[in-house]
Every structure is written in structure tokens, then in C-alpha cells.
Length: 389
Image 1 (spheres, one colour):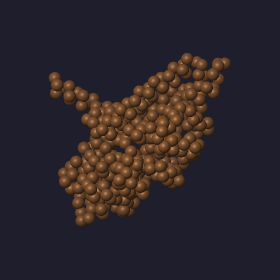
Image 2 (cartoon, rainbow, N blue to C red):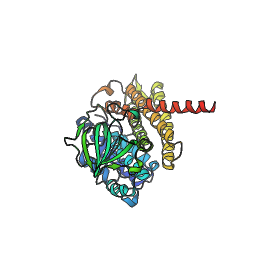
Image 3 (cartoon, helix red, strand yellow):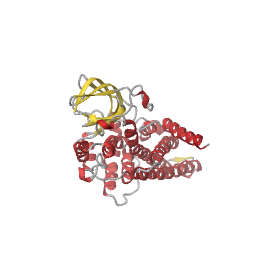
Image 4 (cartoon, helix red, strand yellow):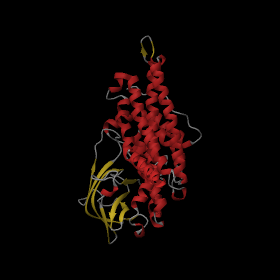
């Protein structure tokens, strides 16, 4: 399999970015085809991510983490995604959990979990989706009832990112007060009352994507995020944290576009068609120019969204959604454009473009399907216009 290494910007003074670029170039790109085929994220590779502080990068330094902002991590997440979006996805749930704990956790909850996440001793899982509830939270049916020392859980969860080996799961549940965010320690997972299955996927492989079945499971030490008084606030809490996740997904998409553009440039400069290099033909130049222009726009929007998320601005939610939509749609387009230049080679099972073709649509689905996000943004605009009329 030919692996292209172009279109990878040099580090700009951040040692973490430089370390990630080196990891991707020297370790990930040469091996990712085998990992993807075997659906495995090697323990040794995860240990490298932990050693770099990537899972706990958003945890404040006083709790043992990297103390990074989302804006600082955009180039890092993007660089990591040039190697494999599954790596960027694997660290995302811990970032979401960190965001939730910092914004809404009690002092005790922060003291208990942030050092674990910041040190890399454990990672977090994040769960909203259920078999009958994707983007429509009104269909959430998994329940949590207080019991002595914890919560009693009943219901099903699906697509639990990081849900097989995490130290803690933050998940949307229904309580007497409404939708709440439950903080559930891993003890008792994979038992008769808390069954776990891994979901086989056509792309986005190597990442733990679990399905849970709770049948009267008494989760010792489980509690409502923010304490009992915060019960019923889970939708606001968890949806608010998704700004971080959507920027993360946008970075996955940018990484895919970077790789697709690298493949396109490699084809343009190494393949002869009609007595000239492919890149000398105007149709190739147009497709590459289109990708470059769109990539610059998506990059700028993602950076603006990250700044808004860090600032907690009112427009952060819309900007993060927009960045995720624009970048992910571009990822799918970029793979298509690169595949047209690569022609039949792109259809070989072991070719990088074959993997990117399977991975790119995940960015249109993760952290809220694009259609659902567009619907929400459109409905809000119509409602605002109706109010002003």
C-alpha cells in the first residue's frame, strides 16, 4: 500500500503538536491499515497517547492534567486525525467528561474524578444515545432511581464511546425530576445486571463503541452530576458539553481532508495520463484547488468555534455545530474528489482512500447527525424571525 505524507504542516512551536506529528508520521501511518483491518487500537499506542497527556489535556493542571484550551488542541486533534480519526475519537469522551465535571460537578465529584482523568490512570465514557432515542431526547427511557449508596439503573444505551474499559461513564438518564446526567463508576460493569456488547462497525474502527443493558443494576457510588439538586438538568448539562465534542469531530474531518488532499497531490505529481502528469491537466488542478479553498474555510470556522467554546460565548453552540457540519461534509467530498483522481486504485481494500471513504461519514454522524443539527439551527432561526415579525 502506498502511503502519502504530504500536506502535513510543520509544528509551530508547541512541543505537544510536534510530538503528535512525529507519532503520526513514524508510528501511525505505517501501521494504521493493519489496525483498521483488525479493529484494534493497540495498548502500546494508547499508552503513547496517555504519555503525551492527550486524554486528560483539558483537565486543569491543579488536578494533574494538561490545562489546555480547546483552541490550543485544535491543531493537535487535527494532526492526530491525519493518522487515524479513531485516535482523536478515543480521547474525546474524557474531554467531554472533563468539561461536564468542571462546569457542573460538585467539589467532591471533581476531586474524585479529575485526577484520574488528568493522570491517564483512567478514561471516561459518554452516553446519550439509546436504541429508540438518537437526537430526540424526549425518547430517553433509561431510568435511574436513588438507592442506598448509589443509583438503580434500568434500560438500554447504545454507541457508548469508550464504554468497554472506561473508569467512569457519564450518561443521560431519566429521573423523577426529568433528564439527568448520571456519573456511574465502572465497578459492576459486564455483569448479569449490566451487560456490555461491543458494536462492530464498517469504519471508525479501533474505538470502543459499546451497547449497555441495565436490568435493575445497583451502581454503587453512582450519583447525579452536580448532586441531587441538579437532577433534571441533564439535557442542558450534556448538550452544553457537546460544543467541545463537535470541535473534536470537526478536527477529525479536517484530518481526513488533509489526507485526501495529500493523496490527490501524490496522484497529481506521480501519475502520468495522456502523455503528461495528471497535475498538468486542468480538471485535476480544479479539484485540488477546490479542496484547498474549502479546507481553508472549514479550518477558519473550526478555529472560531473553538475560541467561542473556550470563551463560553452565546454563539458557541451554533458555531461548533456549523464547524462540525461544514468540516464533515467536506471530508466526504474530499475523499470523493481524491478517489476520482486515484481512479481504480482507490477501490482496493488496502488503499488509504478505502479507509477514509469508510471513516469520513462517521464525522457526519458523531456528536449529533448533521441533519439533526441543521434542523435545530433552522427551527431556531424561524422561531426568532416569527417572534420579531
